[in-house]
Length: 326
Image (cartoon, rainbow, N blue to C red; front, side, top):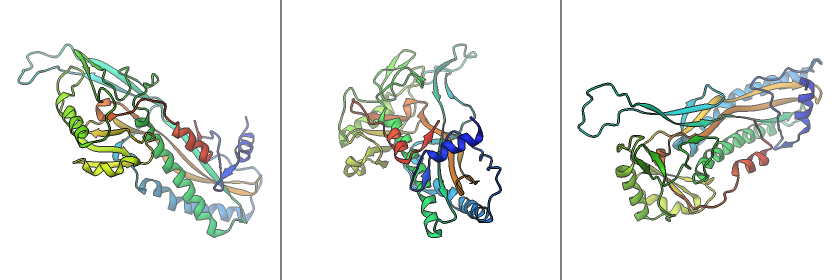
């Protein structure tokens, strides 16, 4: 497909909030049409480019739940692989008398950063007072999708995803394997959010969690994560809390721990760009980023999750904004 064909396909997809969905055209701005643009379009392009510089940083300045839960890290591969390594399996007070010959590579977690695009078209006839709202709508769309994609990690915490790999268990399981047995980051069955349940989970995190060798680790409960239906109970947790509107089950709840395992892999940071489309006599403004959210160590979270089918909230959000993800 030629560049012109791709541009025609993108423009014909439709718009929402004055936004048109874009095809997979890469992070760089596509080439502008060979036709000479009018002075009005050139002036409009320059104006919108300045507005991009103003609005682009706002996405990372918006209050968000995912920033409190996920560790942001730079992704450098098409598939980000996190390898678990098991080192010395020492008990307290043991001494190292010889180099460890039993260190080995453990489980591998795979995550694929997705490319996400959204764009809107502005013509010279568009009122100046309407343009800022288009920018705000685009920023809000990316922000909402980030929140949803991050929450989906917990929404599906009881469902094993074989493409991610890991230890062969869902994020929350009673059968996480280690060298000499199993460990658990959930209750034997669903437990509603009560002070007793929170205390029991906190004690289990501190006393019962082990590494790949089966040696106790110094994990601590840090933050309660609950859906909006349980907001009245979150202040009972002694640490901080996050009340997430994107958790789809009204009864399930989680505790984020001190273990670094909830990750936000960013391959390409959010950026905005502008170019002229002389075929439609308009200027297109595009937002783009490439990232994903996931879990690389189930010790990062303790969950009490109701089993059952979950809504595909991420898919619903993409349809809402006609947002393209590849």
